Image (cartoon, rainbow, N blue to C red; front, side, top):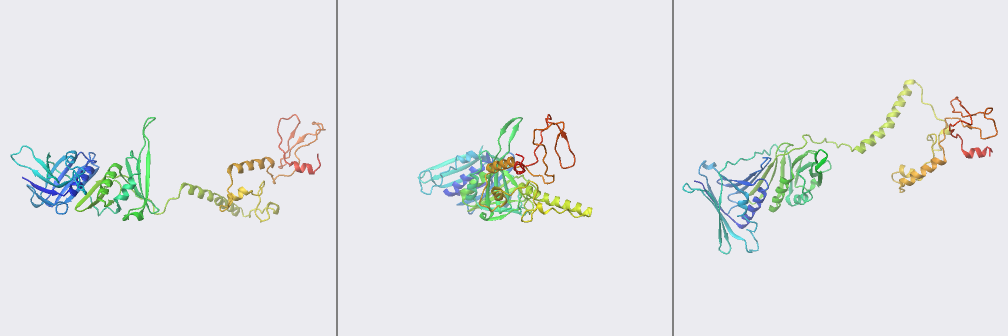
Length: 442
């Protein structure tokens, strides 16, 4: 026959209520393990992916504590299981009231009734109120074998610590429908908490729309932060919220320990003889990010663009070296006053073009106006081709016989073509109208 008796202060009884609220989010039942110097409440979810253990020190947390297991000697224990809602109906939220209003209690006495002549075993809770009223609750429990999750903190090299009040502010930004939480350390001294849900489709129908919320926190805000950069660790948002909310009731710091994805992660916190440990299964990326940050796609494109002229120049120089001849020099007429090479058809840069070329310029061109100005200039000026001879391409007079004086156009390569006036081909001009006026043709 086991002997288990302990007494709780109103403040300790209120903490038991908060613990049961947290454990109720993992499983409908709570397992109890009583040893000679420690009382433990544990919970394991149905998928066995989250394990919670709350240990209460027999000397520090309780006003009085006595546990004598029926077997096992000094290392013996008493284990049982009860419904979480049954315990919550006893340990209510207003058991502790600093102002001493109605509903507060003076103390809470708990004992276990296990007798051979009794048909049922009972977990008896007595609430002694301030007005002399005693409320007695007799709960039925079930004998079970309690299992514990093992976690080796020596292997968990990644760890961080942050006050629970700050973490609670961050989780308020998470969406109500998000399911997973990705925790990773960025390259710029930030830790990102990203909650998300993946899109689920059934054929053409979208059953669940994706939702992502990311909160970036500077690593300087952490009390302790030692995490491999770029390592992604993914856990359940629901479990993380339950842990943070309960840790905030104790006003203590939340500590995390983990090694790598697919390996367990453990959250730990506690105060005043109460220690909470939550072991969660994880997923994510196996390898961390490289030490040097990867350039952005835009940066890659700009580098590729900048490499193209240099590569072309190298190929040109290689060809000239192989041929044994230096590249031809350009004529002086092809260069401007500054000595730069002037390409055929080039025009002096406009103000908008200068503003685009000079990043420190105060003039910001309007793209629509610049485009319209360029179209007007192109329509007024045809690009000059200095590689061709400046010749008149057709006879402007109409007083001639087409059979005697055929029209032609010189392409500059020595090839000519004869066209009659009845031809439907369109002949493009090769001279400016102002030059024709200077020649006095009309």
